[in-house]
Length: 223
Image 1 (cartoon, rainbow, N blue to C red):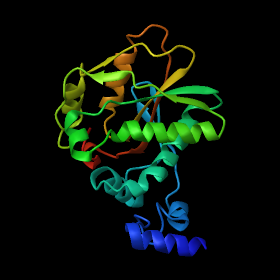
Image 2: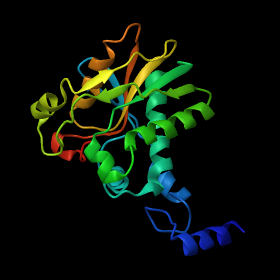
Image 3: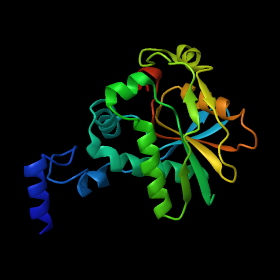
């Protein structure tokens, strides 16, 4: 019955695994088993950051399809990978606030949604299922719109985002993890932490992301 349901779904909705094309409503089990998280610590100016893996090979292809190609079939897999990175970062912390980096108007217009915000909410739901009291806290906002960072080097990216964010004080009682999709130079995460540092009694545990790029030119288009 399950196979018939998946075949009918594919026939009616055009649904299928975004990686191999087999009928279904998302990434199939075999493809999920081949795209497993491989958490890596990212050294970033004293900030603890964990990415679910390197931005290379199959992971990079999947991220391109999801972020640039708009392939929503990867949503659940990406949420699983981000949740894994958060778990590695927070250890045995019982509660955490996930703070998504804010999206630009340009990105929201191009992609039709707040990609990182949606990712954070899906990851929080998965963390809750494994016993972590996870809540998304959208406390960051852009006070100016940075330019697209795809072609910028490390120093240009830092200048581009410096002073671009402002934070409102998050609810007390839980440590924070800033989340993003891809860490290229880390400029966006550092700006987010700078903005949060101005809030009273705020503890930032670090940052979590889907992938870390090996060099600035290996990143995807920015928010």
